[in-house]
Image (spheres, rainbow, N blue to C red):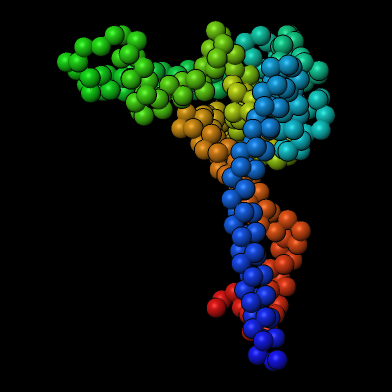
Length: 278
């Protein structure tokens, strides 16, 4: 009678709860596999695009960065490099279309001061790399090993590895080294100066920075030196890694409840007697 029916309902609830828990654990277990799969697809596509047409990829990134700081026209950009002065039109920003002089003297000032800072930064990084190598050699003093084995072990030392990466970020992967650096003046009221690992060996400065904060060469040198220090210390790489972590966390949150999302949380909190503070 009533007792049998109650027992049946209770057993049904327990069975439903068990299957709900199993479904939950399966959903949680598949999250890391989905993240790896999504990351792998994105990484593979990125590598394919960069190999197929690296100039087009860099140009797209360049345009995106300019739009973020309020630049919409290629007439508002001047680029100074060892190749000369160029505007931003098709791939001329990368090739370096030489002109007789810069339309804005501030572009040449950025290049002049920026190059001095980068040269000084290179000397500083190389000196620290030499010191780190000598310090790491002390750990293997008295041991007999082949030169290539010793070189591999030295490169794996955390401090040596840090300064190797710092030098790579400054000199790049080409034979031109620091001579490949480009100095970009962007006409926009937004005050900003930055470097980006998405576009290596390029230093961006806006006219808004000059108008609001830079009144002499010393102030400009201080700002540019600050930005190069971020590059040396690898802060941009750390920021990129943190952003990737946030994207992964976003995927995890969506995977827990891909249909209702935060609305389901509102439904639970809205029930009588349920509070997030409890």
